[in-house]
Image (cartoon, rainbow, N blue to C red; front, side, top):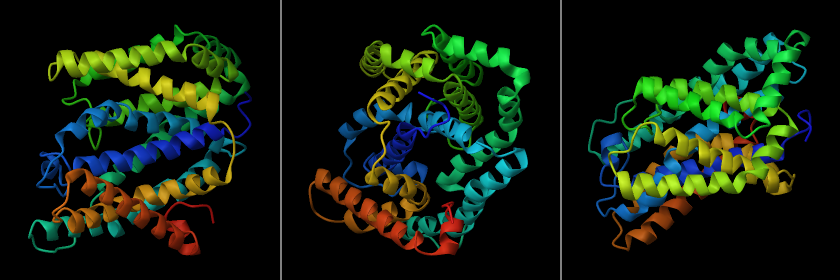
Amino acid sequence: MSTTERRYDIDWLRVIAIGLLLVYHIAIGFQPWGGMIAFIANPKSWPALWIPMSLINIWRIPLLFFVSGMGLYFAMGKRNFVQLITERSRRILLPFVFGVFAIVPIHLLIWRYNNNMNLTYMWDAGHLWFLANIFAYVLLLAPLFYLLRSKKANKVRDWITRVLSNPLGLVLVAAALVGEAIILDPIPYELYARTWHGFFLGLLAFFFGYCFVLAGSGFWKMIQRWRWIWLVMGVGLFFLRTFYFGFQVPIYLVPIESFAWIVVVLAFGSKHLNKPGKLLAYLSEAAYPVYIVHMIFLYMGSLLIFPLDIAVQLQFLLVMIFTVVGCLAAFEGIRRVKLLRLLFGLRT
């Protein structure tokens, strides 16, 4: 696979990761501890839902960091450093600032209304912390990435290609992730939002995601060849973490399991999803605005549906439908207005 052609599998993985984010956030509302992290919690909880959610929780955000690093490789294209920062400022920094002051306060007002609190305006980064991290990574790593693309770094690029085309090369990536976890000792590991653990884990994932694409076809062929081994490893570590260790999981095992699942997703995605289509084109453009506004519709749906005297499973389905339909309806409006396209990071 050429590293200069468009990688539709990466677009698909970004869409899938945003979809998992929606499902995960909806599931939090059905956990008894959801209210402790400023979600609208359902009085009728569904604890069993947390088992599948705990499977994706340790890799869904790191996957987005890896994919974002891959995306930067293509965003650099023929742009110089100034052009890249200008483009990333428009696509990432502007939507972040707009969201902090105009989007997040809306779902905070809904949350405050649900909790019988004063309806005062509060600006906050909320779930948009991810955008701030990504923009920081661009500023920090873009100079190094441009150096890696230069003729001066031919030997370094050749070394990266050789290492990442060998399954043992992934041990180095896993070791870096384990080292970060051991040094920062996050409790829990899944606490990414606005923590130093989330920042440095994201920085490593962003860097290695870029290097994966830089390594070229050798990397993709290698992970496809070994995909079933990584799948068995991920499943085995998940059962070990869930049914053996419970709340006493050794800190070094979680990043290994997380990385195993990420490699599985990248391997199967590159093998089966690297193809264009109208659905991908639509969802790829919708993913970013949906991510920005989804908490508004999630909180609105929770406020309306949780009081209904129906089965908790049906409530989950209805909140899911309400959130998805609301987000896509909002996207249909956003995509048609030039100013809104700019504020939500869409190409104008």
